[in-house]
Length: 553
Image (cartoon, rainbow, N blue to C red; front, side, top):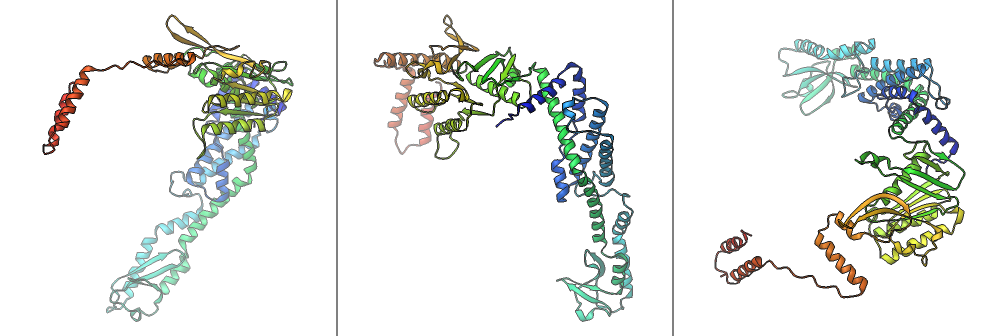
């Protein structure tokens, strides 16, 4: 489905028309530059809510907020189209908020530490104090270990002693177990736990360290988390304002992009009417037009109103049928989202959906087929379409029996035309020219068009003009298309002979066998050597002999 609120579409066209005016071009270029570093913060704010922010995300958020502040400053100094600014107002207060948030993030987070979120040094006095203690912890532990060793009796069985700090547990004296039993621990040493190699004990000195320093690592983490939570809460308290701002910036970015492509491509403003007809004059494919080295050939599509709402286009392969269908769909879609379109004139009804029935080259599901998929798409287009739907059918039935495909397509055309004014807009490209005969379908039910071709008989070449014209071409130009596709000339000539015989009901003449006599003699010689070979002989010699026969061929 596509947007079908005509008032909203016209409002978008009004805004885009302002953006495409020559006097507005410098502002568009400046807006594009201002928005380069503005990234969508929706997902980042979700990470802030979940508490899963990484350093990279904080950095990205700070840059985006700063860029958004610069964008807002520029819009305060310049006038944007009124229809665009009526839903969102940018103020100096908002600019100050963006700058304040960006600066607070930069002051808080150290962007150079990517492994973990690291608070800038000297940002918080308490955090700085805790970091200094934790940084000097090794020296403190070594000093205390020396004091404990000095206090041990001369004949103490303790061979090795050190002081360690374990988060959440605190300070402990670690004694090596080798040659040491529990009862050998000095008085005042209270065993906390043991491993295979060490006893871990509390004593008066450890208790004093616990009282003085506490769980230093835990305190450090808690302080860091508290700072990040405070920063996060401030950002989340303004999440609605930020969401609305970035939505507005996204709209401006959209209109700038549409304005640039519309001006560069010389696109025009489409019009919508209550008429039940569609008219596209000089329509062009926006992508192929850029890729075509020569001038792109525009085409006109006009149907509905007092004319049938169904167009059937024929023409040889490569003549531009599929391109015409796709460019029509693109033009209708662009117009419906509020963009200008690549054509000379465009008048459309209110379109509710575009349904393409294009062969995808294979089965979409196991145990299915390409023809079955085509039938499903065609069936859905019948069920889902309204009188405001555009249906595009490209080469339906080419993966099936010719008669089956043609019959089903003819039935589809009849089904659509039977709806009368409630029929959808339908454009069909096909090779089934038999369905265009009066005894199959009444030609008044649809418009016949063909992709014009000029056959240069003197050179036996085919020249595609890529121009859709009313009427039908009697020839399919299949053999000429085969030549253009690179088929060997002798195969094309043979195909012509077979085709002629089938049309006349005569036997197909046999193709004369061309024999390479030199190769024939070599084959006979090689076969004689092979059959005369003695199985007791060296097989490598046999292979070498046969290879030598053909080596000079």
